[in-house]
Image: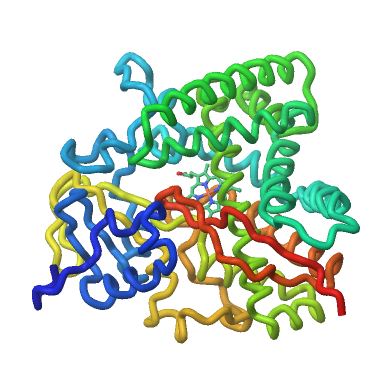
Length: 417
Ligand code: HEM
């Protein structure tokens, strides 16, 4: 409720599984941001922050916690716990990836992983170009296809799998496991989905156990080798910690980058002047990627937990209460982005894009540079390979995974002039 008594959306009204939200998320998010920018939602027990300035401050605050077990037991976020019950005998870093860890384990594990991964991403352009070329070559001669299944899905999976060092014949299995595990991010998941996720998690772990052993015996030019070598050189990481976090790269990198690519192509095909400019100047792909991240970011929200009582705006936050930064709402905040619903390639010219699609602070996305690289290369090569691409006129189908924004399918066709 706002002060004037009008109802405002709560956390459960912001779920991709609710057609009233997923058809037009902006309607509810704009209402929330304008009428109740910091909202205490009694149903979920969460506080929702929708203004850009508040969200950025929250994400950058190093005092905030992250692990769901630290959230108040009555809150929904407490359910975002791990697949299995917490075993206190297992150290925190061996229970969950850096995504949900707090200091000191978070920094201890993230630092060596980030160093090795970013060095690989820095050199990854030729590899990503090969992956995109192969996906486009498979589409040669086709006049109508689903861009999600044929391009946006395979590119991130093959790119991250090659960076890690996964053999080509195992890559399809990796994809299906990662898709089943990501469902655990859904607090409304079914018991059946839970069981499938546990099985997929076991299979993926077993595969990584083998890969680590293989690379210890026979080093190769890949990230798995980098991590076993970092460990041998003294980085304080156990094998389990390495495995869990390599898995986080696979899972964090696949669905999100797929969604960035597909949503970006959709926006470009819907905005003919932007598309024409990109064709004439491929360097504009970087701006197209930033605008896609801002307008149709693949992740709707991220969370922090209040370590003690605090006040945000004029709302009292209880100790251990989860506070959600609504990234999508912040990224369309008219205070920061004039005409926020417009896809504008000139918006970030000369300035760092201030959108919050990758979160912020200590937990900001470790894969941002890779996601950007992949999407830029896809945009550039796709418009060159298919100068007459157009959307097939059909209803848009968004995926139903709460917290994420991505297309189920994007049918495109080559126009014949
Ligand atoms: C467009 C694509 C992507 C988006 C929108 C995205 C978004 C995010 C967001 C919002 C967070 C949480 C940040 C926070 O709480 O402040 C995050 C964390 C993370 N992302 Fe991404 N991500 C993307 C791609 C990737 C890729 C390609 C990888 C790896 C290959 C990756 C791996 C991770 C990991 C491991 C974390 C946890 C970092 C930490 O907690 O320290 N992501 N991402």
